Length: 378
Image 1: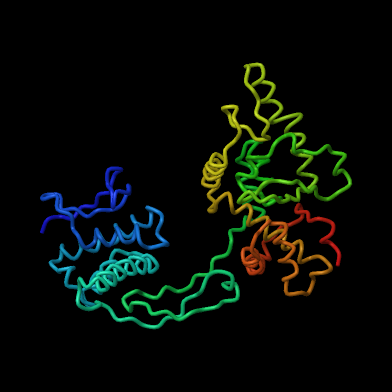
Image 2: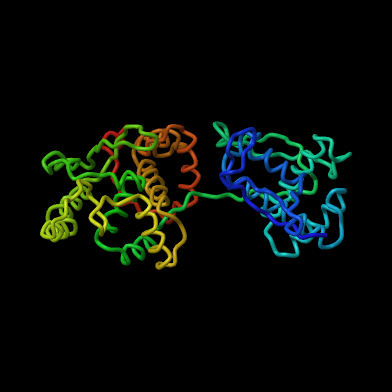
């Protein structure tokens, strides 16, 4: 049997006159014959299935099927005449390779879907697997209340225990360890992320002319700063006034100010953004992400820049739960307030922080977090 190889189509590959790039194609290199069944299936995945618009999805199916066919041909079993026992042999091989159960389940799901498609097309006589009823967690608007649905799942797919995942929270020690490794600019960026919940692109887009005069907030806990957020929605960042003062100092006296004086002498045109790259251009969100990814690695911490936003949400919820109107309650009123502060469109996105707050409660340090005055009293 000739070895099977995987190729990806280029811009000359067309179906009904329409260009499709990066579609996986199975080929026998010696004869350059296309292996029809798996190739037609992947074209179906790429073109027909409404949920599979990304070439990464096609690639995942392609490599799962490629590994399966190579294994079956390597042990002398015909993959064109499947049976439940033969598929079980391959599942046992994945277990011997030391793959974790979720990975095995994903691979077996793709292979079973391949055979289900062959069965619907009439290319094989029977389905090579039995199904069993399993309770599956639903997703969407009602996922936070634990709604489940019953679905028929191939018995060959190992059940995966539901692993509870909480949003990542950086405790005080982790924050200090990371903070010690950062430059002055990146320290301020981290503070904006942790103490306002701003996203990378929102911080990168902050301009000097957005900063109000200090007289506008001198007697307040927070300043309401209008910004354009996710999806072009206009919202407000509630910025602690101590952070606003830190930013004024960075812009006018040190940090950015020192670099601006140097760049002006060299003839550069200074962009209006607060945070500028070493190339004297506005700092890009990707640059923020990469810088903090490297810093987290250096500090031997797991997580991403977006986890600073989770840290803000959990710490702010802790602050809200300590107010008079929320003490002794189930926290749903506080979640409604947090939804506004986080600028979430759906309450579902906010509700997950309630359970995370209970999980991290003993680690939370929220002294530096400020909430607007109107949330402090009933």
